[in-house]
Length: 361
Image: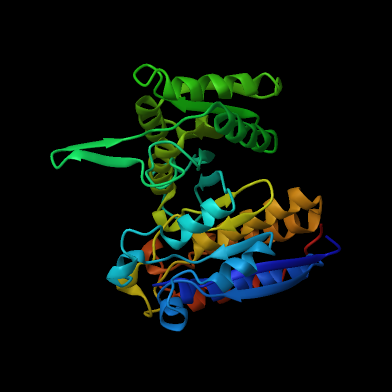
């Protein structure tokens, strides 16, 4: 790695052009403080790319991503694109499929100073990101949904042993760095072959991690348990649809969907992408909450650090999280979290705390 880090930066739509520059400035200060040299590579996507290139995801952007290990993706507002792009894969979906980003990692933890439904929550959902019931992910050609008649709709759900074992290994590796506990979530009492295969594949991987405690839950029971006692859980591994639903639940239990960080990763590439949308209704008003994308970028630096065996990435990520926590604990937040700050003012508060740290890797 030689202390060199190249990161793609895609502003996207809606609030993206407001939050992404804030995140970049915070991350830039943290990586420089950790002794890394970073090159930020701006790339086009979304409505602005349609205006300039005639495509929401220009070929030039994909060509540039081919040469990058990681990037920050702002939200996209595909519902606002011209009619000719309706029915096409969203830019995020195209990127995810092109680079095989099979692991969607979504943490949920309560921050000091933020009113959380469950202050004891601190967990990570490892969501299989390449198959399941999602129509845009489970067929080589065409959609996984089809209608034999106008009154009948069918969906194909795909679960494979290879993909299930792959995400299980990611979950167990993260558990090793957390609290050594993995919960496998499935619905094998009803979907016996599909989610039963997922469960069995995960439990087979568990044998390679004897130091990690492993248990299992049906997805409906898991939803109830997350509301009742989320502090009992560490890493949750599950298939695509269940992971999508449970991660929105855990974000709200932690305080807000505006805290919903995530990365989409393969073994070779990773993308920081907040779990929330583009919020076009507040775009341009300096009201957007950048916390989710800030935390997503810290996760991206952690991923880079592990992949490249360079502790400076992890040091930069720790500095970002410490500054973020201190800022929120001080009651400094955007309006959606009960504060009075604008986007830029909040970013400056976090940046100021990073600048005051001594960052060591």
